[in-house]
Length: 85
Image 1 (cartoon, rainbow, N blue to C red):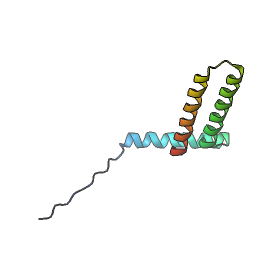
Image 2 (cartoon, helix red, strand yellow):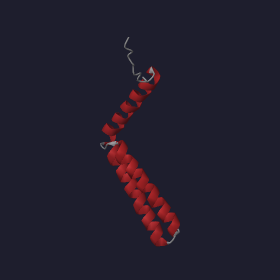
Image 3 (spheres, rainbow, N blue to C red):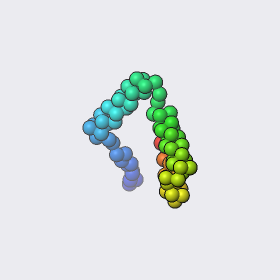
Image 4 (cartoon, helix red, strand yellow):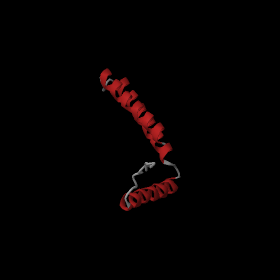
C-alpha cells in the first residue's frame, strides 16, 4: 500500500489576512496622497539620516565609534530595505 505525504501549508487566519489587507489599503492611500511610494520615502529618509550623521561627525558632536556604528546600522537598514522591497 502506497502512502501519500501531504504537505500542509499554514494559512493565515482571517483576522491576519484582513489586518494585512487593511494595512495595504492604508499604504496605498498614503502613497496616492503624498505622491511618493514607500520605497522612495524610505530611501530619502535613510539618505537624510546619513547626511545628518556626516554633518555631526564634521562638527565633532559624534565620536568616531558612534559614527561608525550609526553608518553600519544605516547600511543594515538599506540592505533589509532592498531585500524586502
